[in-house]
Length: 244
Image (tube, rainbow, N blue to C red):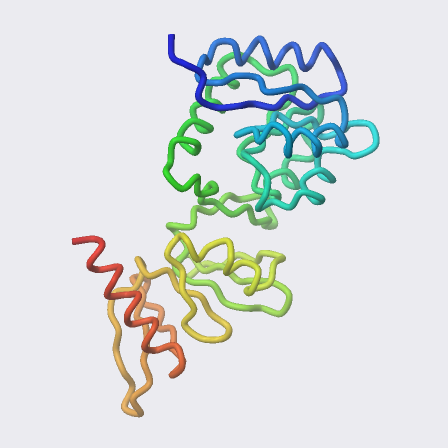
């Protein structure tokens, strides 16, 4: 039997629900249950005392609910989060908090196993980088974008406009805040109002006036400000070396 490597915290105000998660987790010896919580206040305390690697978090709990737990703790300081709830209407809000998954009770063994497989991949990564996806809303509903498919991002007031080829999506998050989320995934500032994914740059060129232009694989040309030209070029070279 594999020794337990990861700690799980189970948070639900219903004893039967907590017991159900324990039973499902029993099939995965890599995990040990570090504690159980009945409300948000207990979760906040356990996050400090137990330092779990994942929390199975109910949305609706007495006093402080699951979303308020994340708000108080902040997304950056949370372990991996798997929401467990009897309601499906909170899914979009859940993924906006960068949750790993959203499970609607009752959860089947197959569905739970799929979540655990995703969880293990994240935990086993050396830097525990958060899931490289962004949830955006469209006229047809919610769409999950992988950062590797986003070519560049530009500021649009209080929103950010994410470009995938010639198609764009709006995210209600400022470019400054979004930069902190995507910079570890190869995005860099081209100018004050634009971020570019280095992997998507086909070439660097210059205008007759000497201004630098990043030509993307999609054919889009993004200007690079003079103050960022040197750092952009250096980052692009380092990226090329890393791929050799």
